[in-house]
Image (cartoon, rainbow, N blue to C red; front, side, top):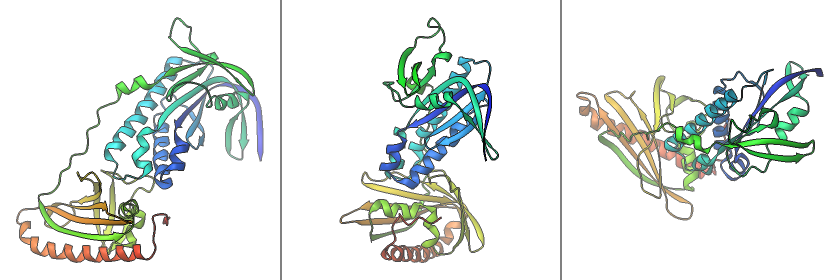
Length: 362
């Protein structure tokens, strides 16, 4: 049942909007872009220091509000700054930590953020147990997402939030919408990037002893092969001996991300890693400290597209041994040879069966 509550209350209406979302989704990898946008929206929600209520997640934007009879513009601007810095810090870190070169992952840094803030009277609509802001001011704040501001990233404050001209150098526009004319100011946000913290790249700490090196050529485009190898959804289809895999399904796999494997009833924690490779190559790696006789073991899949949809895959395994563990090197090398050979065989059978990365397993 839908019930309109007629009592009006004053409220701050606050919308952070991720610009570039439509092109990002339609022209890049849908699955990865969905996870990236989801992470960014969650991040913005976590930065809510004003006590804003979440009314709706609207695809690429959040619709937030706060019932308030007094508005402090300085508090609003601080909230905008907190969200903006968190957003771009995440994108900066993601660019350094990403392991995937699909369109979504490689272009995520191009996403931008804008804010529209309005103040006025609202009513509420109650749908079962859910209460939503309603009224002409809700329409106004959403209409303002479409505007002629000549910037990619900005804050819009409507006329009843505009401080005195002497207090702030501002740019003011008057626009006409279906509800009539409205005056608002816009302020650029790009200068806030000067406050972004320094993000250091993850170091390439490769173990010293090389235990395994094998190259195979597989008939599949490089991006599709990379997706099969790096996407945990597909792992049980080609890796032998893994009974269970636990990981965060809401995140795109990236450098530093941990996951748990149950291998022969033993839990093995692995961390996604990467290393420097050639200009036309891609690399996916995993590191673990749960292998007996070793301090750490890293496996790398280095991919290079050759021609006509074929990809050359080089698998390398490096380890650091515990004291006297080096004595086990011949046996470990033999075991790795057996395990990796079986996995490669299963991977090739999977690819030859007509599998593509579009066959997502839920």
